[in-house]
Length: 298
Image (cartoon, rainbow, N blue to C red; front, side, top):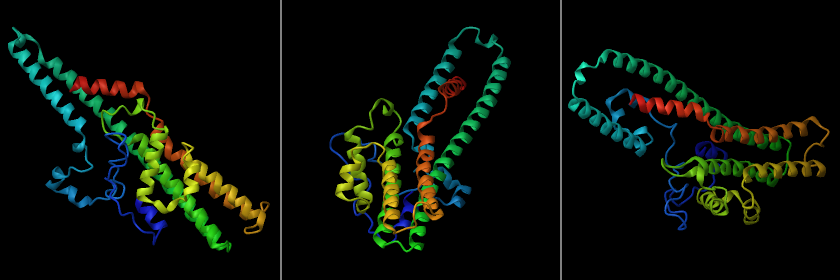
């Protein structure tokens, strides 16, 4: 998100404050405070280093950085010790046939491996889908900018529409982080992240990263809506209609005007496509069954 955005905004000053600086004193742990879009990207890594033993020392961004994973490993270790002690002190434990237990363990291992492989494949596919939606959004902004420039539209109109497009992309990015960027154990589903406090936090983060993307009047208006990233494209469509009425672009009956609206609709549709993998989760019965089997096998 950040790298593509830098290409769209070449020449713009970079933010001087650190992404890890405190956002608000209202809460001890902010949902967006640990966001590191400007510092680290999970898709930017040297794959050649993974072929050496140094792969075991790579902690940042890996599964080993998850505290919940270490907690689960510790609990499994304690249960294993307890079961070993129970077996040792249980009379006639040696009379129990271990062959059947080994067969059941092998079956569970293969079955869980298959289900986990399917789950990981589905997760990667959802990630690619969300990433592709963001790329389509930025691509629509670029095409819209190129189309208006080719038509000889005034520079301030082109600049405004491009700025609106980048503002929509950044608001969508931060909104998704606000809903999904949380540490294990946080009661994120029980919190209302669309209240005024979280919206204020989102705009504070935007001001830290890209303060030049919005004006004070626009900020006041957009802060009244939870889906401000979608409202912006209504502004763009309205501005395009006004430009057609004033003669800055071909009239509404022309194919060129239809092409411009198609780009706006493409951008709007990409907003939905980017949100879907985050807000539409896998069915609970599938995830619950998989988790139970993993715990039992562990």
